[in-house]
Image (tube, rainbow, N blue to C red; front, side):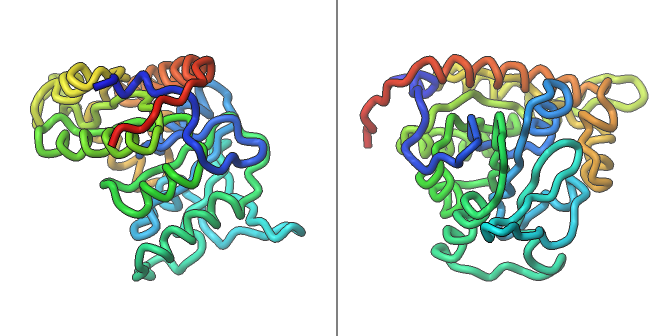
Length: 269
């Protein structure tokens, strides 16, 4: 089997005017690192229609304004332009929609937004390989996808499925990130490998993917999410923030490499 990281070029889909690259990954902090540490123009699209969390994690609220072209103006905080279903419905309102409605909503949030000039549009993906993932991978011209997983075997099964799904729709895999790699004790800084050790790295090696790095569990991870301040901004010297910053640099480099390789191998089903 050809290594997934060898799939190059962008997927065949909609290219949003003014947006250089679009990547699929479940990580608000990666978007924040790209914007705050590397001064890139970043957009953040919340693709989790059923459980939108971007408004809370980015401390944004209120329905977006609409310009004269009837396009929504994204909310902005920490230098990142954001769009989420959570901005379009009441805070506690459940989204009880079938697949076609989810697909339509995602297309409108991607195409019907005035993103302006962006270096990277980060699509914050929900877990799994359902309608949202297929819609994003088939309808948008993705430069690449990043697989995020915790180290334990049961989570890595889903990570493998995600990589296989993206490969079938010709989306390059930028690499794998290991989230919750260990718990960092706030008193002695001793790591505890609650979910196992090195699982994502081994999976990356087995699938011939780049291993981008790991993010530990720290007490500040939870508080920063709840307070709506990404940890790379609130605690830039923390182990997690440094991890995201290092990963962001690798992502930038990998996108530059992929941009130079424009061949499109045939899909093997």
